[in-house]
Length: 253
Image (cartoon, rainbow, N blue to C red; front, side):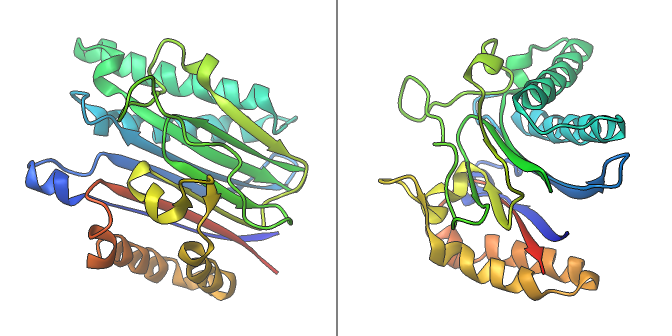
């Protein structure tokens, strides 16, 4: 299996106006288990605007996820299941809580959403805490496996740093590997999803997947720069003033 992956983030115009930087973070990689099986991992975290160090929390979350995956893949037995998702979230939380303790702050000061996709020949797992979104195709067309989470009140959501994060964690498992996949922060939700039906907006994703499906492996830098330009374009900034992150993966034939 050959996956082509690309990810990028761009600061929102409202953050620029407020003198803040981008508080999104992402990570995407294709690695191998100890048995030699390829595994795709892609994660997105979005720092809470109300948190003192939300952007740092998002970066810590994806760093912890990457470290967790490296350790999990080294095990003789690697399974993609709900237990893996729970262990991943616990690892992310532990990393953020340790950072908070070392600085004399609280975990809430590092609050961020967290979502991702893990896929291997034997199956795929989507997991999510908070808003933002996931789209994937395991052979039945592009679908939204998890409805983006809203909090109890308007403009609120759940965070991986919340005490009940493991309880509110939502997962969706598939027995097939992904053919196409995307993960994004909530700054792109209204562009990437039909919010009324919680379905993927195919015209948004199709051009990206078409390019990735034929892109040579030596064009990774060019793909990342092109995605960055798209996220910072007037066409996108006219639709959203929030930070934007997009991670994409396509399985090439």
